[in-house]
Length: 240
Ligand code: ADP
Ligand code: MG
Image (cartoon, rainbow, N blue to C red; front, side, top):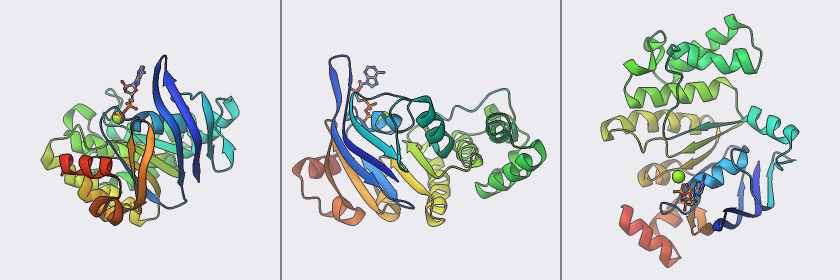
């Protein structure tokens, strides 16, 4: 569904992606791990055009993501993103946050959009807060609303960029539970995370990025318990 072919990206003189090759298959859950500054966020952001890249190709479902309007609107309509900071609209209720995109971007009718929004809020355990404002929710609750908001766009894939890193430890579990359920439903997911236990349990594949290249990838159990590259071993020893 998503393919990176020798992707290079730099910010000025700083080379951030140094020839990324990576394939993400339909219904696959791929966790991306790696040191801070290794290019994980940049890698995700290049898929939906939040960043451009200088050479190589990214193909999403047969469409070459090349910075053209046509490619961008197709990819943005089909790939949702969940960030470390949840970025909910502060002056909209929880339900309005979820229905805003479907109504104003996709042109769905408000009635059905609200109905589906409530269904999604129920799925993430937040229907009881539908009429609250973001400021009245915990970080974990806000992140679950952000996931419902992503789902409301009926995406074919969801990219998560450290979705639990900004949360108090006791709030992480509820968010991971929602993500685990999504994975079980067959959603295609690319998850940048430091939650190694989650990756071991949920990921089909784990990709270790270091210095802007894929240093190692393979089945979760293999990469996380028996890594073949010394850099992966060293990294895991530090985070475990
Ligand atoms: P990670 O998510 O793995 O921590 P990032 O993709 O955020 O890594 O960043 C990779 C490198 O690119 C870092 O050295 C970072 O400082 C640099 N970088 C990221 N975004 C920008 C930007 N907008 N301008 C300049 N440098 C950036
Ligand atoms: Mg990052």
